[in-house]
Image (cartoon, rainbow, N blue to C red; front, side, top):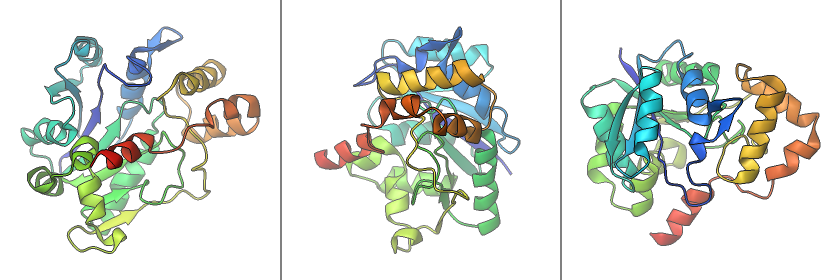
Length: 251
C-alpha cells in the first residue's frame, strides 16, 4: 500500500506574497509545515508540488534541506501539477495538503487516511462539512480518482483547486461518481482560523508559535486561542475558502 502525501506550495500569492517563506524563531512556515507532515506514521512519501515561477527555487531548496522531493509544474492548473507529481509514483492513495497550513497535525492526517482505508471510499476529507479549524485541512483520495479528475475536469475552479471535481461528483453531495465520506472532529472548531493567507493570519500563527513552540497538537493551539481572545480575533474578518469562492465567480 503506497500512500503519497503531496503539498502544494508556490512563491507567488495575491494577498501575502512569499507567505510560506516568512519566518518565526528562525524557521520558515514551509519548514514547519513539512516537518509536521513528516511526523505522520501512515504516509509512505511526501512530495512538494510547486511551480516554475521565479522564487520557486527557495521552495525547492527548503524541501531539499528536509530530504523532500519536489515537482515543478503549472502555476494555475494545480490539478495538473498534482497529477504529474503523483503519476510517476503510482500510489494507491494521495493525501492532499496545502502549505498555507503551517500547523497541520500529523495525527489528523493519519486519522483521515485510516478513515479512508477503512471505509473503502474514493475520497475522504474533513472539509466537506468542516468541524476542524481552517488550517487543519486534509483530503485523502484514490490515485485513480485524481487521474479521472485530471482527464475530465474542465472548469477553471476545478483545475485551480484540485479536488472540486471529485467531491462535487461524490456521494456526499448526492452524486454517484465517487464514494466519499466526511470525517468530523468531536467538537466543532470550524470557526477557528490557523491558516496563513493574510498578514493578520501570519501574526496569529507567529503568536501561537512564540507562546507554545512548534510541536503541539492542533488542540493545544486552539485552547491557547480560546484563552487569549485578542490574538484569536486578529484575523476573524476573513472567511473560509475565500480563494475557491473567487474562482467560482470566474467560471
